[in-house]
Length: 233
View 1 (cartoon, helix red, strand yellow):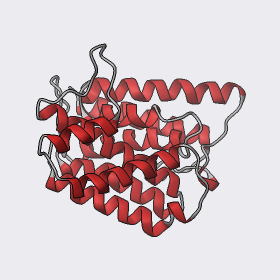
View 2: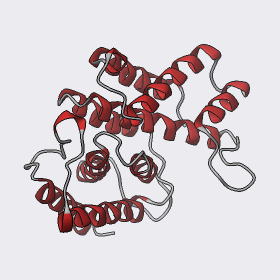
View 3: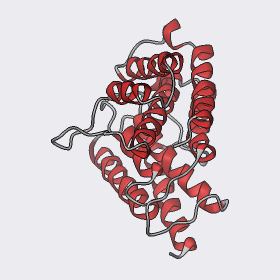
View 4: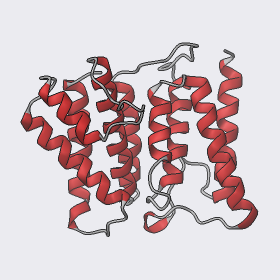
């Protein structure tokens, strides 16, 4: 693959996103109050089309089974009104673009499996969202990153992550399977379940209460980073 063309493609997507949302030249930013930028009419249709293009580009460039693809799919699959959803989708595009630029990822034809350092890149995006005051978006991205890792961890251990009909198993069931097979213990399980519960609360639009305090979100992100290092997929 021509890296220059790939970078140009990803840059064009990010530039168009900034144009449509008037977010300037920095990393894609969520609108104030943790809400997505609301774009009506033709611009709204363009945002929707651009999101689809972003997902398709990430899948083609990094592989359909790569963690970039899993992450962008998980974020895009959150509830339609999830806080900062659109910004997080393009945050994954930015993470892939930066990793290619900095030599941390070489596009290949086969699926790419990255380590905790690359997962940390997504968590750093969550830290960036938190620094901008968007606690909900930070929780959604960190929780989605954790869920993706848990499923890859289970798959790597030969455990089922789908039912007989090919539907994804609930992440809670995946966690139980991991514990029952000795991948991590019940104490670790409790922490993981707390993080996933916080992600669900944020996805459901929970208010900015003490449940999603800045300190708790920072602790969650740090805890997930440590979990990834202890339990590599």
